[in-house]
Length: 148
Image 1 (cartoon, rainbow, N blue to C red):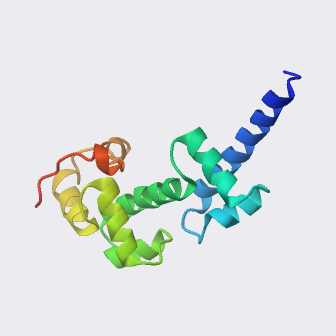
Image 2: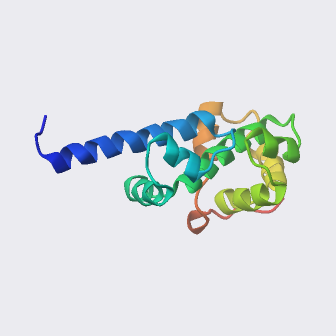
């Protein structure tokens, strides 16, 4: 263990940021905002956002939306809920915002994704492999998927 105060402060901060990330992973379907996440670790919202981005490469909100979209993708592949039901199940309160973020991260709308998944994946890949193939990606990394 180090006795360097700066190193100890940084380790403590990383532990707090990990708690925030773990909370997002657990409670992604709950109403979460940066202010509430910051209060949970006694940081200001601005400081949390800056440090979270520096540590994990994206803002807490972006990380939250990625978790929600990942879950939405699984629910859409399952096929028994409407897009609107999926939207609210994963914690989004606006169908428009959900659809926009989904399209940004996945490269197609939720409805198009459901159709594509039903045609491309259903029964062809084990679910553990399907999850890797259909993981959400940032818009700049989006792959070209033919419109069906």
